[in-house]
Length: 410
Image 1 (tube, helix red, strand yellow):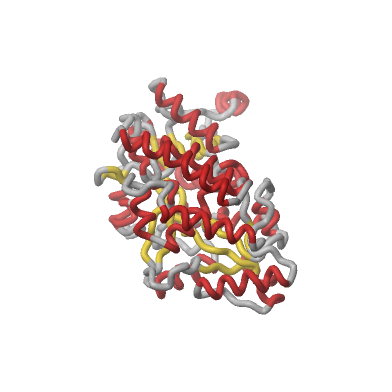
Image 2: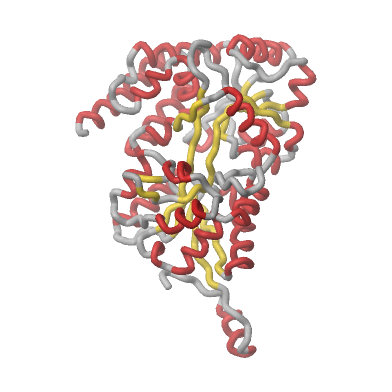
């Protein structure tokens, strides 16, 4: 076995004395999702009960520290055996190291069993070969507090004009329309990606291929709109480091975030029945409906990909039973069609998306070159801390300088 940890020495002594007690195998799962530690522990215990292999989670406190750990481990020639990552360009770059195992057999089993459509594997594939399993497949939407909406007398908006009306009524009633912060350093892109997609989807596509500059008029229009929303008082204090907790406590009426936040809000005492969700309306009503999605992969080192214990862990994670444990504990869906929907909000949101005929668009984070993610998000954060057009011009210039340098080498 590769990097297989046994139980504590005291238990090993017990085995020697009793002679009949089985020793459980344990595989390590590294991640930067500390807010899901309790849920992952439940999956790990369920995996041990079902397969004899316990998935033991090993969390990192920040995304940047975590990325540094993984990248330095790979550079030293020893990739972590099982760990979470990001899709899109980040996954492409990771696979290019040659240290990540293809997962064709795990996916074949999952697809042949009817648990997953073949198209789901595409989200986690590089050059047509799957290298990741879904930690979650999330949709980005606007969550809202039903009690606050009922108090103010508004419903989920269907158009941008409706959204403006809802925001105005919330503010007039003493409620901040949206929760939005720079907490943990990565959130700065959320409103940028959403406003760009809702105003100019062509620009959204071209910004990720180097065809469009970050200091172009199309991007300037987004910052102008964003700045105006700040001036209208649409957002909470962006410096707060309690975004989830504050929204759960009624600190805002709406919250633009991935649907993975539903479980976190519930664990912070905002019950599922008190929440609703809708897809952000387009600013330009002539634009076809779309929803931003993310597929967060779990990947395995080349060594772990040949290890029976890790394969057992992978197959359990992909099973309907594993998906149900994970969904119930975290509120996340991995796309297993035979698993139960984690909550009624996701069921309703999926039905709404299907009715709209909305297309799926990958997140900015997955599409942007991995080497630029941290620096670009830091620039977006700096705008949120000073949401003026003067600051926006500086941010656009800084981002474009980084972007131009990257694409000049491609």
